[in-house]
Image (cartoon, rainbow, N blue to C red; front, side, top):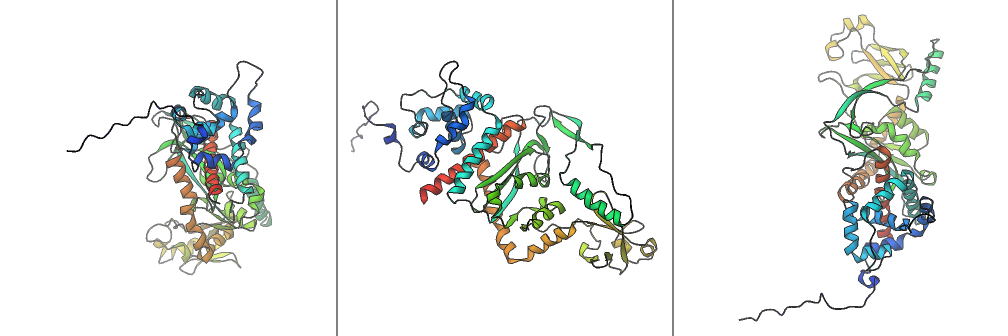
Length: 446
């Protein structure tokens, strides 16, 4: 019969060692410390702490590092983060704390983030880390990828009110109106005046967090949410981000996301890959006129079942008219305020047409083409190139991977915060942490 195993207990043994000896050489905190000089943040944080008043405060750099620990290691709350730091020697080493040093209370850290640090600070932190990655040569911006994801707001979807809200003014409206009026003046028509009255629309507004937006999309359950609009490079480094309420369409925010990219990065961009939500005349025009290419997928035309397909109506660009499947001509009539040129058939031609039921239920057929439609067609034609077939599939392992990691590993599926500024600050910190983590791993492996 085997004798029972000898009990072994070294809990009470006295060992002399430093915190540094307890941290494995390949631990992520060592990689983080090596990848970035955190002292660079000290001058950025110092204006928000006045050492001449009250009791000695916690080092603001320690507070920032605690935030990085929470985000990088995906700890769901600050309370839990402090508990982890109390028992984790690697975290203590990263903060510069010894075994017996007291860790700050979680409420102190939360108060500093909410009340002492302004939301703009986290955008500056994001910029510093991105600049470091750029200086190290980690950014590969020949191809960039832009998309958005929604973040569930801290708002009960059953608590809302209906109210009239002012619609967002598209910043390119003045450019569009100028070109529209050029058409109208050339046709001896009266130009449109700029709209003086703002347009309003009935919206569903949360009573818990009015700055969130009612998000409705496909099979997703309708919720109040925020949207994070992100741009990344081929190596999954995040280049820019813009946060809006969840009911703002992706295409409306494209220019802000794109313009937030550093100019020295922009110079290297050749192709911008986006999904079909960004297929608008303005986006295609603005990208192509910069000398860059835009990779957008095919979108199925929304034609009624049994009717003629859109490609069966042939556009004669030289003579500026459209030929219908029955060989009748749709002539140009005017351009409307939205920038669409209207082409219309003769009522008599439609009345005598044997295939009218496959075309229209109106007295005559009207087709609209945007004055910038040639840019959309150029983007559509680019789909047939080998370059598009190489670049567009990369979205699955670039921007989609960024969102998957952010939600699964960095708690970006939802937010406990309320208000656009605070939510944006939180997201910018998460994205900065993701860039820092990737930079640390790359620095260690090279």
